[in-house]
Length: 136
Image 1 (cartoon, rainbow, N blue to C red):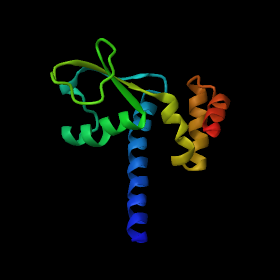
Image 2 (image 1 turned 135 degrees about the vertical axis):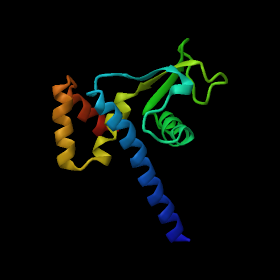
Image 3 (image 1 turned 120 degrees about the vertical axis):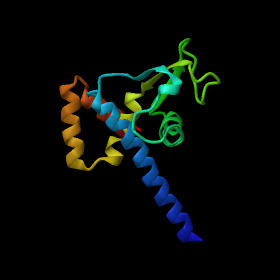
């Protein structure tokens, strides 16, 4: 029984890393400055070339649950599930601090240092960020 618990934990860690990596590198593509990932009708929301259902179930909603992103309707009401009207306009926001707080967990040290330099070039206060990361 101990081995199956260990295997499930390992799978969960890999799954968590994949989810974080997906959202983090999408945020990095916006040079760590853009807060809006998507704005438009819910039915057009996809980005990774995967099947729509796969994107929703394995990227979007888990990303919301983990706090890497948030989704709102036009009236700024938080959405955590598929809206009844798929044509409803939504906005998906990155939650930068939540993404950046996990960098030290998922990036190798040399990569982490490179990313800290890039963040600094994009206007982030890296020392303040490190304090937030290492306090949590």
